[in-house]
Image (cartoon, rainbow, N blue to C red; front, top):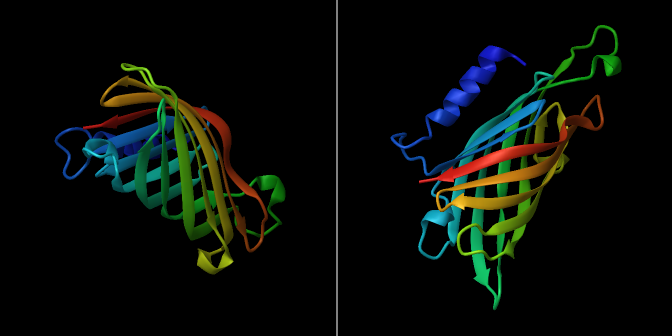
Length: 206
């Protein structure tokens, strides 16, 4: 991994800590080969009804030198059941940057990096697995998809699916284990995998 890029990446996350302008939280997910950070603006967890719109901006880097910036806007809402609760979210995600192509797939004379961009629609659903008073556990799944019409540069299609099992450690911080599968189809290469792995993460709001 580009160490300087990783340092700047974590510095971006640190700027979202208390004292940073307009930031309402930070979500950081790490695996052996990838890192993803998102600064959360106006997370619904801070609102009395836990309903509202959440804007997040962040970045993704990998050991293969994938470097992407992303921005998403999600409308979120919670519904209370007799013994549990569930939450739903819908929204859009814009993502763009550079992705690395496996050298074994690159034809002689071609570049091993593709510039990509996409705007996709997304859906997220979660439910309360354990309604503990102090350490509730939540499970959620999400998916984003951008077809050719909303993909640009060398990108033809973008897909991302993820799942996470999350436990609230304290009211302002949750830890989780998750899985993400993310990739692009480009004009020259199909199924360029950026991430297909398990990660651990921490989400903090304030």
